[in-house]
Amino acid sequence: MLAGKYEHTMDSKRRLPMPARLRGELGKSIVLTRGLEGCVFVYPQTEWLAFAEKVNKLPMSQASARSIARLFFGSAMEVELDALGRVLIPEYLKAHGGLKKEVMIIGTGNRLELWDKEKWEQYQGHEVEDMGNTISELKEFGI
Image 1: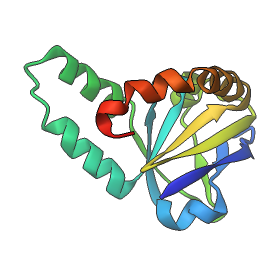
Image 2: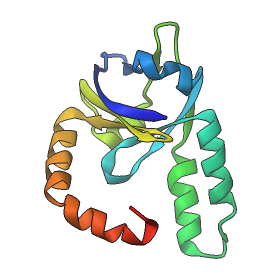
Image 3: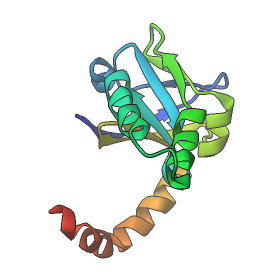
Image 4: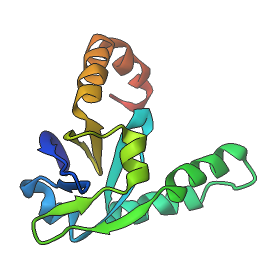
C-alpha cells in the first residue's frame, strides 16, 4: 500500500526522488497524470492498468465519461525511475500541479499524489477543518 507523507526537493531539471521505502511497490516504470484539486497523480503500472480498464468500460456516449478519459489519458506520461530513484516530471504536469522546489508526496493507497508544499499545507488545513463533513458524505460507503 502506498501510504505516508514525504517531503522531497525537485531539482532544476525537474527530477524528483521517489521515497526509498515506496520504490519497490512503485516498480521501475510509473504513470504520471493530472490529478484532482491541482495535484499530480502517480500510479504504479498495475494500478494504472486497473484504473484504465475501469475508465475504458465507461459508456463513451456520455459526455462525463469522455471528459474523464480525456483528463486522465490525455495528460498521462509513462516515466522510469532513474538509478537514483528519481522521476522526470514533464513540464505540463509541473505546471498543472504548480510544483516548485519543495514537493510533498502523499500516499493515498493505490497511488501517490504530488503537491507543491505550500499548496498542500493550505489544502490540508482546509480539509482538517472540514473532516466531519467529509466523513459524513462517505457514510453510504461504510466509512
